[in-house]
Image 1: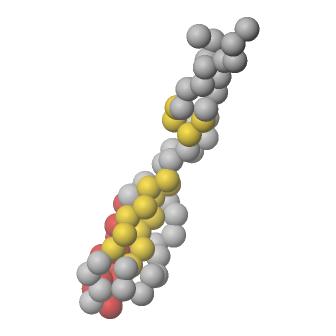
Image 2: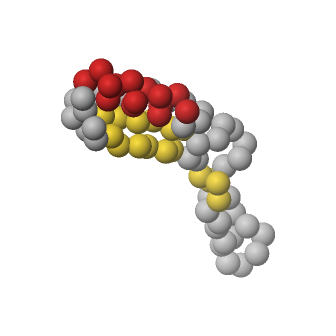
Length: 70
């Protein structure tokens, strides 16, 4: 008997993707959010306040590797 095959899939059982923006000049960050709106507003306000123009956008999603029946 062979071992089960494994699949790598998006985990839909919890929250969706988590979004965050980080300033590449000072490393200040927006904090995590369920959508991109709040981090984007944070980045625009931070840019206006500091003059910093470079940002790193991070999106984290969750995966599972359940065994398949095949």
